[in-house]
Image (cartoon, rainbow, N blue to C red; front, side):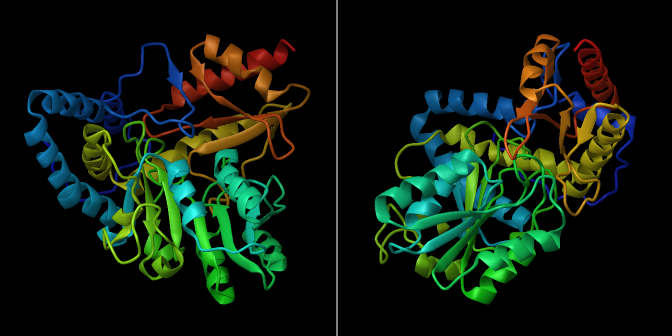
Length: 396
């Protein structure tokens, strides 16, 4: 049975309604004693999603032809339109991929660029997002030039001013994160408008945004947007999408179709061949689960949890909070900090041994830590994590 996707919930749910959020938490399968606070790396799919994947593979083994037909129909009639509606765009603007990195390889290799053309990016991009640009630069002579953005970030205006100042007459593309690995929120709509002002293609790495906050791609105004749906969206591992705005297709070739053949919409950018149909179909279940809660309620819950965490961290003398308090500059769920005299990378192991899943952040001049809370986390889990941090600091 393939999951019907319900309409988004618009009813307000208080972010501190313990009764409601504990019921939501009951749908997750984390081992007892484990505290998962690394959602920016990989989210936990709820039980309905994992069960949908399992049922799908079973059905594919029982009746391959019938299952394939049902999956293809469901993906085209429910999953693609449902995801597009969630993102505020048209179904023909959404290509389904395995992750943001795969989407970005399509972007890098599909854009029509000549030797000497410049791609402006920033110093805070994820390594796997920069790598395809670096490979193309070595092979074709395009120039990939990062604009320095300080960490912590200063302001939206500072980001925009630095990028504007780096644009010249050979610049063709602006490429940047919606939310960086360190949890800084970039002014995507303003940067997209800047790109239009100069006639540039704007390509966005949105791996850390969708599912953590409301994302309307039409309102953001970017040309291309890549995402991993197995992060904050809580889809099954190995799912993502690429948004291709209709009027950018003239400058963006498919790697799989000639210009005058094949799929008329963004599906023309999808990798050809057999893929894991039950996994992609389970995105419908993930979207239904999210819609039943409501993205506005999720974002408020994330803001409440990360705000509580940040206040606790501010009370520890050797800890320097790097995440801005301002909601216009910070991720709803990811919190970045460093500890005076202690490399954050040295603490990830002891945390894991204690059943606490966190991450380090060894870039942008920091050797700090990143804690990323999602709506199924609790204040008690945050307390346990911060108490562990205080214990480790006292011991060193």
